[in-house]
Length: 453
Image (cartoon, rainbow, N blue to C red):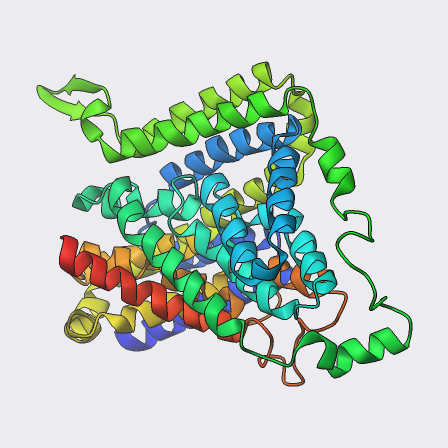
């Protein structure tokens, strides 16, 4: 009887995740909260932990990033990246993805890739390089940058005090393991992708569009005005550079205090010395940096709130509020069942938990929400915290179904039609790069924790 009730609860949780994902926006959070209501009021489960630290970190980091956008700092950085990429068109399959990865690593959000994807596409097209090659890896690299970024909500979730932060995992551990793993995975994927598909001039879809006059085959980087011309103009904002330096100062301080915990203030609490937690440190630093950006960048608070970065961040916060609380309520409410049923198997074969993370991320469309939903279960099952760090890249599985905004954007930005969704939907351009980066990054991460810890 108890097993039947748990299965019914699981079906309700999965159904609400599916409905919330289909609705989009804050729908995931709203329907997640419906799940909390059903689990608590109907099934009598104790409410799980509210992911307050993650939500507050999202608010603080997104506020700083939105201020940077309002000050013209993001446009300025995009302009610099565009100049670099145009100087190395023959290596766009490598440099394009690395650039989007670096942007997302620093900013903590994949939404910064929207400014770079059209530039990458145009450089590849005019250089007669199949755009699918750099575009697919760049799109996946943007997501991979989140699982290793000191500024991302997903990383904040991992190091929160009620998750791995309470098990001795610090920010420096995430950076040491995930950044090199991601970098190597992107390079491997770029190497493979550079040999996939026909050359652009031989591609039937490209030939059709040339024949119909949709594309000028004589276009070159020199003969056509830069597609980022307007962005470059905007990036000349008088105070944009100052805003960028202020933001980078914030990133540096977060990494510094995360890597050297002894630098964080300590206090006497009930006769014991307690050090300022990393989530609180990030919240204090980034909100303060947001103020500094507004001052030195001469940005308006109203402009920061109106930008797409702020809106996306608030959507993420609401989503995590509902969906993570529902997941925590369900798993903690039935933790004995999971311990007795699958603890031995998952402990013996931890890669099975990575598969669970991968498929949950497909449903949730959020790395942070996936972490908050499943990592408490992984900890309760006794999986090594370092193994959970190595599995972190597995939460990037939402490329599997090609309806995530970055994928849709990449397809639309490719004028040649080489970046596309296949006849059977799942045979789309992003699958190969997605699986390569996932497998390689997790494999490299395991090697790192094996030899360094």
